[in-house]
Length: 94
Image 1: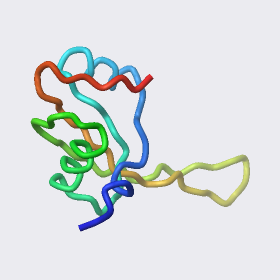
Image 2 (image 1 turned 30 degrees about the vertical axis):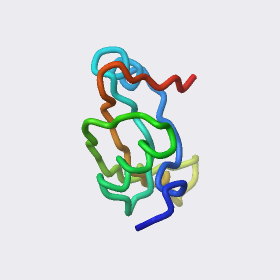
Image 3 (image 1 turned 90 degrees about the vertical axis):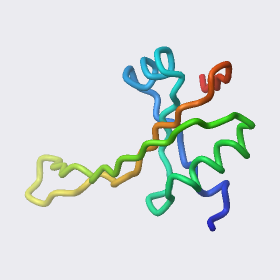
């Protein structure tokens, strides 16, 4: 089991994330790549004191990028978790 403070890395704020928060009471988080759903659920419940109903995860590979040169780089890969909170719970991330 990992330290719960290392599981959640960042909050992903986008149009889709704000739409999910308004419609389905879901929060989009960037999490540790090796974290599983149970660890993510426990981390959110412990850190934010919110009841979690479901967790969905997705792994994203970094995109290839070129900066007007022959060599190319790659943006970092990350794992995204969509956490659904219980009815009546809310998380103000702004």
